[in-house]
Amino acid sequence: MNNLLNKDKENIWHPFTPLLGASEPLLITEAHGVYLHTHDGRKILDAVSSWWVNLHGHSNPHLAKALAEQANKLEHVIFAGFTHEPAIQLSENLLSILPENQSKIFFSDNGSTAVEVAIKMALQYWYNQGINKKKIIAIQGAYHGDTFGAMSVGDRSIFTNPFASFLFEVEFIDFPFAQQEEATINQFIKLIDTDEVAAFIFEPLIQAAGGMRMYSTQLLDNLIKHAHAKNVICIADEVFTGFGRTGKLFASDYLVNKPDIMTLSKGITGGTMPLGVTTCSDKVSTAFKTDDFLKTFFHGHSYTGNPLACAVANASFKLLMHEDCVHNIQRINSKHIEFKRRIKNHEALHEVRVLGTIIAFELRSESGSSYDHEVRKKIYPFFLGRDILIRPLGNVFYILPPYIITDEQLDFIYNTIEEFLTTVTAEL
Ligand SMILES: Cc1ncc(COP(=O)(O)O)c(C=O)c1O
Figure 1 (tube, helix red, strand yellow):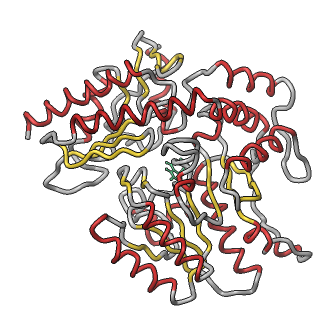
Figure 2 (cartoon, protein in one colour; figure 1 turned 120 degrees about the vertical axis):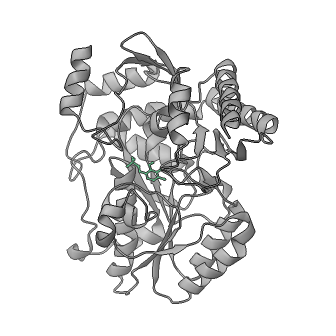
Figure 3 (cartoon, protein in one colour; figure 1 turned 90 degrees about the vertical axis):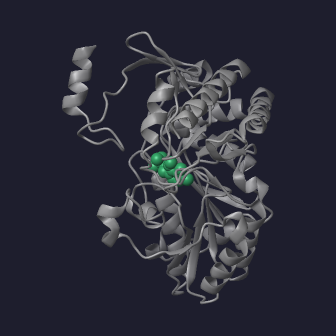
């Protein structure tokens, strides 16, 4: 096994990981339910659903079966000029649960590409009509992915510094903290009043990578209402929030005013296969229904609509819609709320935030919040040392577990968090 790790070190460049000075990765040989099994016999509780993708537990037998059956039938086929049942079935499944105005499904293969597609769709919506609208509005602190379009609409940060001059210009409105919602709305109205705005992109209700920052549903509803009054295309990036994370199937389900375009990925396959989806309303797709070949949406990826990914997404959909899963999501939410009540006044904490199956802990910090906050170096090893995988975002850490996690497993994490807070307080 050491040989494998040596080869890993020699050959592989891991994501978001420095090439020098990073600790050795853990070698995972199997994963079942909420546990990742290491080559040397450890069993690590995956409290972050492996980058927020896993819904029904690792190596879920129902998903594995669907994947194997599909692999023996049709593994892949070009998706231009060809189609297949798993993709058609998935489009039916998604449209049956998405907000009613969503009517077309465009496939890609990850969250960033789903966002690229959304941005391009929104911009070409105007281009196809011969209307010159090019401005995009985003929210300060946003993260929409690592490709260039997605980076452009994301926060300018240590992630994007080397590429700053290559990113297109975007108007950022302030994050709508509770005390400054009015100011954010006024900023927004001023921008859309120019009649130059093509689109508004947002992570609905919670900025995930930006520090699990939650904001008001009413405020977002208000922004969308104003945007629609000015014909601005609204893009809800539900890559993180989709498929039950926030307590409802989609964060947009909390809204009265629905987005024109939505992006999905992560939980769509239950965390088994990479898949991205961008959906849109009739309003958007109508601008592409033309005899003019040059107004075609010229976008696609080799693995667009991959049958294996679609088949496993259909299997995951079945589990997601089952009453057990609906109950589990509510159960996790109740447990989170109860734990929040118990520890919210802890002196090490600035704030505890809960939304659906997500609970986030922001540690008190004299130096403000940032992804490279020094305390992150304590959080990760503390929990890993106790066989829990928690990946901090600077001075914020969070749990968003697979929905099949048991109450006892949640209690184990909560108790370890309390132990951690006591340790941090002692060092304050
Ligand atoms: C809201 C949001 N959009 C897009 C992405 C990018 O997804 P991916 O990592 O699959 O490219 C992420 C990833 O964390 C995300 O949280």
